[in-house]
View 1 (tube, rainbow, N blue to C red):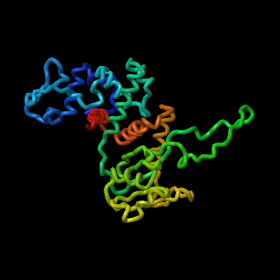
View 2 (view 1 turned 90 degrees about the vertical axis):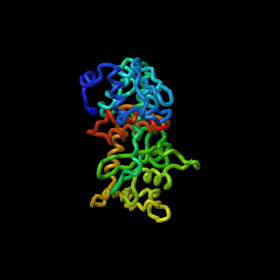
View 3 (view 1 turned 45 degrees about the horizontal axis):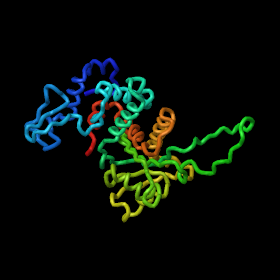
Amino acid sequence: MLSCAMTFIELQEKFPTEQSIIAHFRTIRYKNGLLCPHCGSTQKVGTRADQPKLCNCNHCHNTFSIFTGTIFEKSSTNLTKWFYAVHLFLNAKKGISALQLQREIGTTYKTAWRMLKQIRIAMGNENLTKSFELIVEVDETYVGGKPRKENNNLQFTTPKPKDTSTTGRGTKKTPVIGIKERGTGRVYARVALPNEEGKKLTGKQLLAVISAVTKPNTVVMTDDFKGYNIMNHEKTNPEKFTHISVCHSLGEFSAGKGLHTNGIESFWAILKRAIIGNYHHVSTKYLQNYVNECCFRQNNRGDNAFDKLLLQSVLAA
């Protein structure tokens, strides 16, 4: 298995040709043997000698590519550039921009942007359903909008009307809900788009995100935002979460004995540094992809992230 920390020389040695890339990907995707996507047969399926990407199924007499249903499907960019892009992306601590990738692999900006988009989609293709347990921290943050600080040097600038809006709730910024499992440090985060009534961060929205990855009877630590109170009532808390809140509004950020949400708040700092420092601006339409990137990096530190990303590149139908 490959480590995300391998050098460029190691990448070249491991994958000197496109055929070596195809062979490695086939091993990652079909570790239990080739599987025909048309009929589900595993008995009469084999690769074609003339085109290693393609496989023939002698059961239903169909042909398929080992890259069908992946982020590499229908891409005219050669696989050597794809693997180099994945390598660069994983080795960059804060990610890379499409402009930088364009320079590195010699493609158009449009192609580089699409490749990074596909890689981020694969990063979000991780099944964390009902896997968080014991103690989790839950918090929400807000992304987008204007910078909080402006140049108030009245000697050289004309004063602007003061923005009376708050920095979080009640603004036009996009909320993101995050969960961090205490024992493992894994995180899960989802962009909270407005519901049918135009409301954001309702109790039902918060509970749906928490319930998606958290096992029943887990201790859930939050701040004192009223939306979390849905877990305080038996009828609206079917998973029987134990809800503990820290009163941030009263200046309380730790109640002692491990009662805090500092872990998930640290993750928000990483997310915002990546967006502001490297990507500068992210539209709401693609924000979830960038959230996926930060979650993947957090959850796969020290793991075989390269091969895991290849496996996650097989997208759900």
